[in-house]
Amino acid sequence: MSAQMPGTAYAGIFWDIENIPIRKASAVADARDAVRGLQKLTHTNHFQDENLQTDNVIKTFVIVARMANGLRETTPQFCKDQLVANGVQLIDLPPSSARDVCDDEIVRLVQALMNSMRKGEKITVYLSTGDRGLIDRVSSFNAAFDLIVIVRRARQQLQQITGFCRNVRRENGGRGRRLNIYLYEEVIRAGQGTDSDFPVNDVAVFAREGVHDLDPFADSSTRQRNSVNRTQRSDGNNEELDESGHFDSLFPR
Image 1 (tube, rainbow, N blue to C red):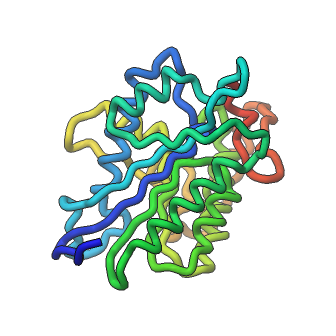
Image 2: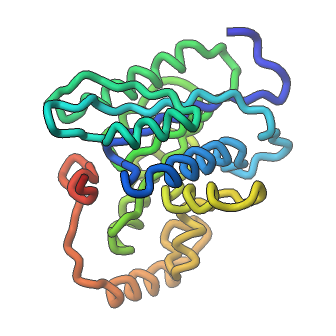
């Protein structure tokens, strides 16, 4: 790899499409908007760094899926075709019953990207997944990079999705790695908007809904009050993540 030019940053976008799928019925628009929104995300100043230039970003954009096994498609071929048509590199793995086959490939790709970088080069890894196990595996790499997680809210009630984001922040914060979280729905919305529309992070989204627990500047009384409000607003939906943190059950295909 050539020497890094002044003002240049590197971004690796890795999308676990089986965990955060696009719908076949709306694949044309969703693929376009998701890719555009994720591209915008790479030009966002996630940590309010001073003098950070975000206009010159060299991107690696990879989606990992599995090929059809008999009559069952984990990701419809039409959806894959739309993503490729929008400039995304697709890695279609052979059929496998192994639960973490896509996770393992993403970990391998992130490690390869880390190995290709020179010391001192700035890199941000964008991980589109709802799998806390995969997030933890990537975050545990012994390399200098910022981590951006894109998670889908879908039908989860507010308390569940804020709890997920809080746990991801806590588990990864102990490593001293900078991490930010965005909701997939906000990425789509930014992709549908104008060039000046950028996704906002989970803290900003939930603050609009009266939840300030994720805000490190919120006082304890505010956090307690909002915790009570969320409990009162619970809609009785008892869908939960499985023990490994997968969202598979929430996304019927």
